[in-house]
Image (cartoon, rainbow, N blue to C red; front, side, top):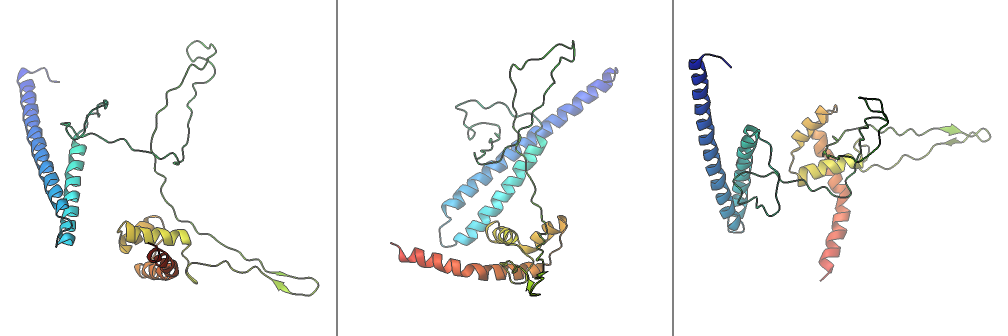
Length: 242
């Protein structure tokens, strides 16, 4: 900090102006968030009206806008989140609260143990275990593509000279390169996650595999054809019940 009194006053004035600007922006953000939440709630009540599809699209757009505003607020807010106390209501709290992720019991876990060793680094005396502090981090293992090579060995009989070779395993798409896991991922991403095929092609390209959009279209169509008998059986089972 400078020793000049005038310079210090100028710094304080600039900080006060910045604080006032941030406070005004925060109030504007809060007002926008509240108005968006009210509009979304009203539209959701009218969701099943005569123009439900149009209202549904408007709700999705407002939710995206609300999400962008909240992300901008979170990016500007560098203060740590306070500890949650039992009985606190996030809806009535003036600050946005971060919800703690709920991890399923079936989620794989990896334990990393940081051991200080067997002897004290200060005096060299022996150490004994008195407890441990455990902290959890939720990590994401990115999906990756791999090429599975299936080699069918050809062998000949020394006596009758007969050629012997195992049959080729079946494929979900005849003469196609896509495996069942890849096809399932493409279908779920398109029809459940609403991820267009051209975006999936961009994601695959970042992983080192360039799949033309026309190929993805063919794979989707062929996979739908493979699943059609199963869909028919499910439909017959459902419609035959009470």
